[in-house]
Structures are given as C-alpha cells and as structure tokens.
Image (cartoon, rainbow, N blue to C red):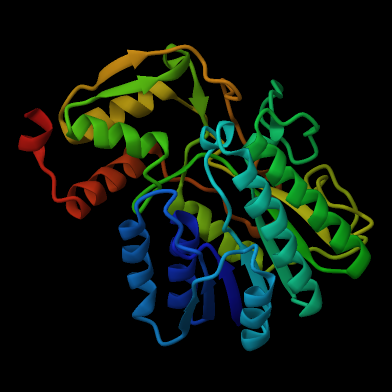
Length: 341
C-alpha cells in the first residue's frame, strides 16, 4: 500500500512510518522540520527512515498548498495519515496564530488533497484535549466536545469538523484519532515526561502543576502506532449503523472518531516516581498551581478501538518509562554519575 504520512520527523509520525515500512508499505513523508524543538533530534529520527528504499521524504510546510499538491500528485497515495501540526498546549497560550495557520489551514490542505486524490482512507490525529473540562469518565467518542479550553484544542476540533464536512460531501472515508498523553523513546522534548527526565539527569528542579494532583491516561508510543496500523485497514463506511459500542460513527458520512489510550489513568506522582526509580535519583520538585487550560484527569474509553481492531493498548508505566529512560540515557550519553553530580 502507498501511504503518505505528514509529520515523519515528529515523535508519533516517525514511529508510525518505521512500523509501516517494516510492514512492507511504500511511505512518503512530509515534514517542515521546524525549530519548535531540537532540530537535530528530528533529523536523527528521519535518518531511521532514510535506510529504507521504500521511503521518500519532502520538506514542506502544510500551509504551502502548491508544494503539497506536487507531493500528492507525484505519489498518488492510497491512504493518508495526517499527524503533522503545531503541537503543545502550553505553547498555544503565547503563540495562537501558529496553531491556526498549521492546524487549521494546513489540515484543510491535507483534507482537500485527499479529496482530490480519492484516497481509500484518511486518518487524522486529534487530541484528548477535545473533551475540554468534561468530568464524566471515561471519555467516550460521542461525549460533548463543544468547549475547548485552549487554542490548541480548538484548532484540532476545527480540523475534525472540516474533515467531517468533506467526508459527508465527498464520501472520503475518514477516521479521527484522539490521542491520550503519548510517551516513549524518541519522544518530544516539550512534553512532561521528557522535561522531567532531562531535569533529573541534570540535577535541576521539575515543575509539578496542581501540586501533583493530576491523572493522565499515559499511552506508550508502540501501542499507539500499532492501533493506527490496525485502524488503517478498517475505513468507515457511510450509513454504518450506530451501536452501543460504535456510537461515534456518523450515519451521514463515512466518518468516525476513535480514542487511542491505555484506558488506565495513572497518578502524576506515580509516573514521576517511575522516572526517579529508573534514573536512581529523587527529583527536586517545584509544586505549582494548575496552569490555564489544563485539566486534572484524562481517561479514554477504548471500547470502539477494541471493537474495530480487537486491540487494546497494554504497556504499563513500569515498562514504558524504563524504555524511555533507557533510550534517553543512550541517546544523550548520560549516566548515573552525571545525574548525581
């Protein structure tokens, strides 16, 4: 299968592209390799893909419709997985325009080109942040998601709505994926698990918001990419009947929303303790109040994922944190002596 992936220099896109290449697919990657965080890390991720003859890369901004058009025309993809975008909830507080330009305009370009090329399946990354301040757990795909708390979440929901309208009008089989706190090797340096690990190794303090009274549905990256791989094979069908399990399906369009999470929320302090255990050093903590736009708990209902694929993410934080810290230690060539200095 010919699969076009946006965001192949990113954390999730890179891991997914590697999985699909190993599975024998032809993959074209699109990524702007922006300087939002360490560009060298992005280049090192891309180097993992360049070893495959069945991979081709384009350095393009999603907003550049002419360049995007050329990449689509050249490859003629069977499926598109749209993972690129401006990431980061906290960054969106100070840089809202970047999110509108990339996550709305850029996503529209991907959706429009997928329509033009009549792709068999369009898969789009969204976020658990779409559920806003909902306090009924676990979050189900048909829960109300009308009040985003950040520009980041609002732009992700905008892309969901644009995708639905295109799916309805032009019969584009479309799956929206709402991710829940993804972590693991080759992760993003702006995310808490990475920031905590870096700070502890460097004998710096970590910022712990809401005084640690938070829970997250931490989802290991290999679990996530396996779920995407399986979902690619099951595009939605227009008029598919609603059921108690698959009640996020849209009867008027070949469109669905699917949560991908571990379905097992973990206390933030327990997650930090796992990092401490694997590094062998106790963290110095700055206990702070809740940040604007943040929520105290996320928890995915994954019944629909299991119904569609028979798969349930299962890597626990003991396994996942160890894998990440081991990768971090090797990639950055740090050790216990440095952590204690």
